[in-house]
Image (tube, rainbow, N blue to C red):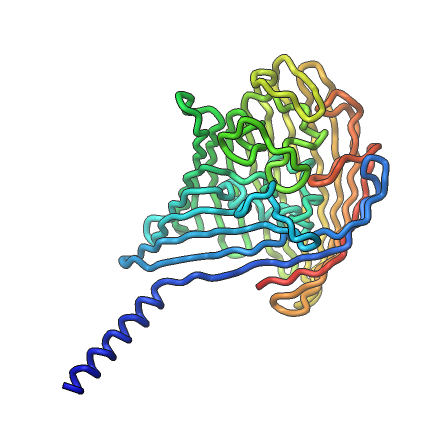
Length: 398
C-alpha cells in the first residue's frame, strides 16, 4: 500500500512539474535615463531628463498546447523614468497588448494593440528605430512620417506572421475601425515581406489607413477625437512637418530597405513614400488650423546609416536622412535633412552607456503653409530652420 501511494505521488509530482514546464510567464523590461539638450524649442534651450531607449516593462506568456501549437500573450507598458508617468497617452499597456496562437508550421495569429508588420519588416534598417534614440524619437525620418519608428501602434488589430521558409517570411495585419455600419472607417490594412540570408537582410511593406487623424493618431481605433498628448504614441499630429494634413481621408505608406553585414560593419538603406490622400474629406482641423480643399501631400524619405563594432563592447554609428514633401493644394514643397551620430558602450550584456547627437535643417514651405522649420519627432519645433540636440545616458535591460 505504501509503495503504491508513493508511486502515485511521484507520478502526480512528475505530471505537475511537466505541466508547469509547458507554461511560462516572463517579466522583462528596460530602464533608461539620459541627460537631454535641445538648442531650440520654439526659440528656447531645453535641458531635461529623458530616455534614448523607451523605458518599459512587460509580461510575456506562453502555454504549450501540444502538436507544435502554443497560446501566447504580451502585455507591455511604457513609462518615464524621470517621473514614473505612463507613456503612450497614459495607456496601461500602450506599447503592446495582444493574445494569440503560434504554430511552428502555420505561423502566428494575434489580436490586440500591436506593432505593424511594416515595422517588423523594415525598422531594423532605420537608425532612429535601432540605435539613434528610438524612445526619444529624435532620430527618425522627418517627424517619423512613415511610422517606421512606431510612434503610433496599431490598435484593434488582427495580425498574422508566417513561418520563415528559406529566409523568406510575410505578415498581414488588419485593424477594425469599430464604427457601426461603416466597416472601412478608421481601418488599417498592412502587409509586409522579409528576407534574411547570411549577411543580407531585406524588407518591404505597404500600409493603407482610412481616416488617419483618428485611426492612427487617436489612442483607440474608434476614437472620435485624438489625444492631445505632445509626446509618446498617438500624439495628435503635433509636428509642423505634416500636422496640417489632419483632414486627410486616407494615408498610404510604402517602405523598402535592406542591410549588409561586412565584418564589423553593418550598412543599411531605407526608402519610404508616405501620402496623405484626399485632403479636406475628413471633418478635422490639424493642430495648426490648416485647411485643404483636396489633393495629396507626398513625402519621399531616404536614409543611409552605418554601424561599426570597434571593439566587442564599443559601437560607433552614423546616419544621413533626407525627406522631401511635395506639398499639396497649391502649397509649396519642403525639404528636411538630418544627421545622427552615436556611440554605445556595453558595460555588460544588460547595461550600456550611450551618447547620441542629432542635427536637422529645413527649407521650403511646410504643411501649415508657413516657412518650414526644423522639427525633431517627439520634440516641439524649432523657431528657425535648424535644430541641434544630444543625449547622454544609461540603459539597463532585465
